[in-house]
Every structure is written in C-alpha cells, then in structure tokens.
Length: 240
Image 1 (cartoon, helix red, strand yellow):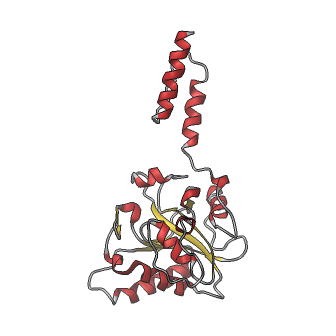
Image 2 (spheres, helix red, strand yellow):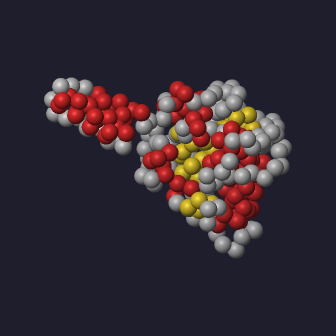
Image 3 (cartoon, helix red, strand yellow):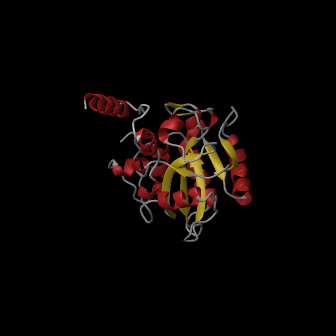
C-alpha cells in the first residue's frame, strides 16, 4: 500500500513538472506517458470556425495535407508573416473584403507544430497569418500594399520585426499560386525602391501546409478589447 502511494505521488509530481515516469511493473505507465504527451498537442477540433475565424477550416486542410488556393466557400486565400502574428492578424481583420483570418505557422518541417516548439526554433516555422478574402472587394495587390505598409522599415531586417527577434519572427509573403507569386515579386521590386538596404522579407511559394496556432492565439488582440471593425484606424497595440 505504501509503495503504491509513493509511486502515485511521484508520478503526480512528475506530471506537474512536465515529466512522466513509467516505473517498471506499474500498469498504465505507458498510457499515462502517452496521455501527457497528447495534451501538449494542439486540439484542432476546438478551433473556432467561420464566420468568426478561418482557423477551423485551415486546420481541416492542413490535417489533410492540402494547400488550397480557395476556401470551401470560394474565397481566395493569402498567407503573410510579419513578426508576432497578433498584430498582423488584427491589421488584416480591419480590411474590407477580408472575410476571416487565422494565426498559425508556415515554412517549417514539422507536422502539427505547437507555439512552444516554434518559439524554441526547432521546427523551422515562422509565425504567420492566413486569411480568406473577396477579390471583388479587395485585390491581392491591395493586400500586398497593406502588408508592406504594416511591415515598414522592418522589411530590411532579417529575422526581426519590431522587438521580436529570431527566425520564428522572420517576415514573408508566401504565395499559393504562380499568379500570387508574380504579384508578390512585382510588389517587392516596387517596394525596394524605397530602401537603400536590400529587403530581407522572404517572397516565395508556401512550402507545405499552414498549421493554425492554438485557439488562444486566434483573434488575440480583438479578444483583448482592440477593435477589429472594418476601416478602423486606432493604433494597434501588439500586447493587449
């Protein structure tokens, strides 16, 4: 009885500090380990769907290994990275013609990356925002201009936007079609005319799928009280 109590107490403490012990002969040790690891994964089924968020549908496509150019509803898809995804997402939420947005991770090599893994720079991903938009209201070229204006002088900084530094914060335009890529390259050349230093922002095809971030990251600044109304001009505060 005493031995069982010690094992149970030790296991409970290990779980609390992120470690799970599986003592030899303790039935259920392996399943306890698996359960603890499973809890660290993103629960994609809990992500909010349309019309509030693009995250749920984006997760469906990611888990199927798809990189669609249009949403199930027929809207065009675009992917941008510009440092912390919270501020980038809110900027695009305010754009008329943008239907829905999602924060997430792109250009990495690991499936189902978590925020902790991406922050540890172990997956190759960068924080990004994927959105769906009505090209009859706002064009992809318009979105590119909004993106560059949001990025500002940080376009010339490698692996850094604002106070955020590291490859997980690198900026990028990740095209989902050859047409988008051509438009992005043209906008890059035009924007370069404003700088003496070369622009460091990646402009390339999206590699692999867009993995939505955890639910608490979705529409984070709006949830914190900042306005996501269309045409809103109130300055965006990156942390609440």
